[in-house]
Length: 423
Image (tube, rainbow, N blue to C red; front, side, top):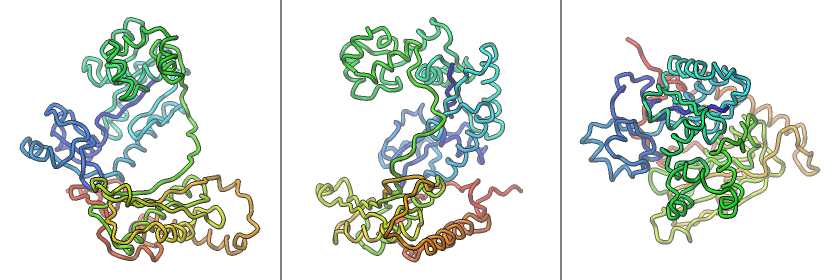
């Protein structure tokens, strides 16, 4: 059996953790630059506000209905996710973190008679220790566990935990699940299946396997197997080695100045380098991309990018930033109003697998640069430090490219200056 632990309305729930006065209040969270609705509490779903709706289109409805509106607070959400995942790992080491608010558990080592009570305990502990409500779905495959988790959310009589361990329960859940909501069936296949009279997951599961494989290939056949109780996917406890690392952002307003773009690109290069160092990896090439406003009819022609190879693979902020700024100079087009920019690091490899380069910098200089970077990381990660207290000079300017977050809540768990005060 597999379990899927799914945090309920995760971003909205995070906003309530340090604001108990918001319990039961309608909440929405907006995307970068306060553009679209990316999270809704149940109260807002009941108002009919769709996911992904542009904020300017639903603002009047939200304000009239007294909805509490928040800018995205990814520092808070990421930290709360880590706390939830740590509790899940305390129950079992066989865990796959599927997304920021979902994790699969392999229950093969659990006693079948105790699974429900143990998952209820896990759910209660997560709520008690983090204040995040979760739903848990249990099934003989990962796909059925996801369907069970949805049933646990929607059927209040299940009290947050649903186990599909009998054919009658599985068929009932599949009959209530639109085929488009099945894990692995995308929007295009949903339309095709609906056109052929297949509207529910049960309809799909009742199709002949030969027909499914012929029409939908291996992926569709695996989904069919999973819905019929045959495991096609296991819990991936070791995440795949990433092939790239991207740091990017949409600007609060268009940017044409290369000086402002230099600061943004230097910031993105630093963020990407930090992630690589945390994973003990290095990059071989650096790509900078610049995107014009997508609503501009000439946007595609104005978009540009440039790639430069590092002298030797590195995750050193100074080296990566140097290459990124050189790539920016190549990609930049004077007079174009850019709405988004980013840095992508490619040709990633483990720090321990580096092949010495005959033409690379001397080992002594490389060691000094490495030690300097470690010292900077320690300073910046100090509890008393302001974020990025020590940084490369290209980031010294005060620019207007930063993301708009007019309604962001405090970063309660990651910033000493934004700790909640109790009086």
